[in-house]
Each structure stands twice: as C-alpha cells, then as structure tokens.
Amino acid sequence: MKKLLKLLFVRRQETKDKWWHRLALVLIYGSTIVGAIFLGSLLITEEADNWVTKSYTAYSFEEGYETAQGKEMDCKFSVLELSRSPVSFFRCGDFSDTTEFLEKYSRARGTYAHLEELRLPRSESGLYLPVADRQGKKTDEQIMVQLIQDGELDNIKVKQTASFDHVSFFGNWGIYLLIVLGWLVFWESIVYRTLLFIVYGKKND
Image (cartoon, rainbow, N blue to C red):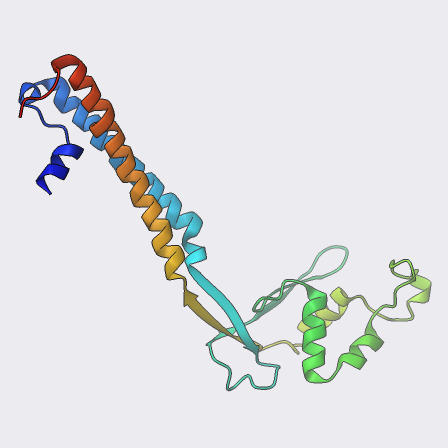
C-alpha cells in the first residue's frame, strides 16, 4: 500500500517548502474536484432514468387489473379548447397516441365495433373523405375529446412496476471513478512527476 501511494502521489523533500509546489497541488486537486462534481452531476441528470426500468402491467379497464402487480397510478385526461377545435391531452401508462389508446380501450370494453361506426372512413388513398361525405362521423381526436368531455375516462388507473438496473448503475459509476482517478494520476503521477524529474533528476530514496 505504501509503495502504491508513493507511485501515485509525488512528494519530494526538495519541493516541501516551495510555493509553486503547493500551487501545483492546489491546481491538480482543485481541477479534479471540479471535474468530479461536473461529471457526477452530468451522470445523475443524463443517466439516472436508465437505472430504473418502468413498465405498465395493466389498465383499470382491462380484465385482471385487480390481480396485476405494480403500484396503482392515476391516468390524466384533459381537453384544451383551441380557436379551431378542442385538442385532447392525456398521460396514461405507455400510451402516446390517441388511436392506440382508443383501440385498446374499446377492445377491452367490447365496444370496438361501435368505435368503427363512429370513426370517419378513409378514402383508398388514405386521406379523409370530403366534408360532404362524412355523414356525421368523427376523427379519432374528436372521439377522444368527446369521451373526455363526457367523463367516460374519469378514474382510469394503471399499475406500474419498476426494477433497478444494478449493472447499468455500477457500470456508470465505475467509469466515472476511473475517469476521475485517471485525471488525478495523469496530472500528478505522470505530468508533474516528469517535470520534477526534469528539474531535480531522479529521486534518492
């Protein structure tokens, strides 16, 4: 252990009372501390989400919800009134698309056929039909807005499970420690030691 410390840290009798030696150590250790804080903050802000994997096991409108594992969380649905037409906003599990939610919701409730009846048909080219041919049907967005305004989506819940990725966590922090230690070793044990060797020559033990 003593030999390892001597290898890592430069301490020579010739430099003991030199002001520039103390300044060099302040710069080396100061930059190491600043770098460690910066990298640590960056690691936490950029990688913390990767250490915990979240998944959604069931929604309250599905069968088997009561026995599904996970923490129960509320889904949030709201409508933003715009000048042209209202727009739906929602946060519910891993859903990010209105059509995806409507199809899963209607299939689970056995109302998918009714959803298809309400839906605006599409032309062969994939574009919506002209207004005159819509016959009172609605887009998925309009259907979603109506469901929210009618309160049909109130009190929908989802169960979420979370698992901690130990490999990613210890891997990230292991790399972090290697970088910080590598910086310190490079500047003190290599660069500064080389400069002292040039000035004073080989150390006499």
